[in-house]
Amino acid sequence: MTHPVPARIGRLCEQIAPLLDDTGREAAAGIRQGLSEPLRLAVVGRVKAGKSTLVNALVGRRIAPTSAGECTRVVTWYRYGAPERAELQMRDGTHRDLALVDGRLPEHLLPPPAGIARIVVHLQAGALREHIVIDTPGLATLTAGNEAATREAVLGAADAETGQADAVLFVFREAERHDEVAFLQQFRAATGELGAGAVNAIGVLSQADLFDGAGVDDPFDAADAQAARLAAARATDVSAVVAVSGLLAETARTGRIREQDARTLAAAADVPEQRLRLRHRLPLPDGVDAGALERLYPLLGNYGVHRGREEARAGAHRLVGWMESVSGIGRVEHLLRRGLLNRAHALKAVRALTVLTRAAQRAGADAALALIEEARLDPELHPVRELRALRSLVAEAPASPLRIALERVSADTTDAARLGLPGDATPGQIAAAAREAGAAAQSRAAFALMPAEVEAGRVLARSYQLIARRAAS
Image 1 (cartoon, rainbow, N blue to C red):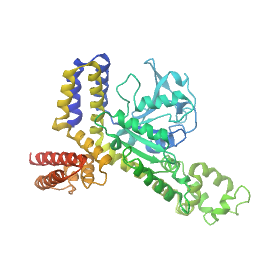
Image 2: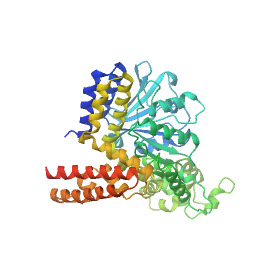
Image 3: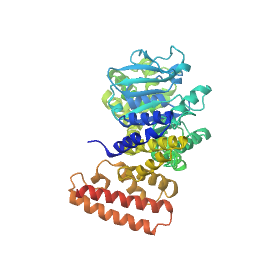
């Protein structure tokens, strides 16, 4: 069954396209095409923040180059498709095949990156069925073209209505920098007057296994504390910040650990950690293959080698499971699903309304603007109002008890889940719970002092009213 949100946006595009100029009609056509695609998730951050390593972990392939080669200077789209292949989409509109090298993108490109608009990689990777991953060259780069490519992909070119991304996974290396904060604020502004902001951006604190906190023994504990501080400081720009070791996640998910590797680690399990740190000065005990152990450091890092030795006693499967668990990649994917993928249609609608509104304003098409306003008020686009209300609530009253209810209503995929009911709840139970929740939301709105809470209560009441109506039909 066609989802009502993209169906309504598709009809809006058809209605207003004849009223726009050529550029606007092209933008409307692009929106219609994107409605049938998965969510477009851009991975953004400073150069060497660990973006490509994180992309490899999310995709489950060592496909993105992680050294500073030419491929890392080009915006790269990873999407589901068969046969597996890569192509260069040139700025002149032509396409060229790009050969993968041992299943990976090459470090060097012909022609030079300057003539390439983007690389598109088609992979039969399960994760890419639900979202397109856009790897960007990065911010604060010495090459102006690299940063310009990142900004164009996410924020849009000077002659475009908006960028290509529906949502952002922003990678912090340590504390936030001024340019990172500025970029997130620009992304929030680029979303338009609907201002999704924090509801379509998630933060990742990368390289958590390398953190050093005063008086903290485990670097992940220090990284978690820093992630919590970042999340509080940047609550209007990102919905959450998760500490992650991209290296451990990538190694765990790309099949790079074998049973022999586990045996090598297990053989060093009883060696004191300080002795391992001095391995280049002092020989290791008999029974420890120093060469084989050394080859594991680039794959696991100091943390993975030193803390994973005990896990390795139970074999490669146990070691890999521990690496994935401790890496934090599972928490990132939970946030992606809960905060972004379950809201994909609404997030796409937010971007679509922004693009169409700007196109209509530029063309001076008052009739088109009237049709857009009519669409905003349509009950089929109520999920957009939920996101807008949540955005305002996070910015103005983040501690409001309405926030949890609004997050659940806007993120869950079934009406029972939206109400916190079990999956086998009957239509009658759903309708009764929705009416009760709606009355409570209306009461909260009536006595709220902050405008964001008033609007959130009204939107929630309407959400529950629509749920009760669906259950009764």
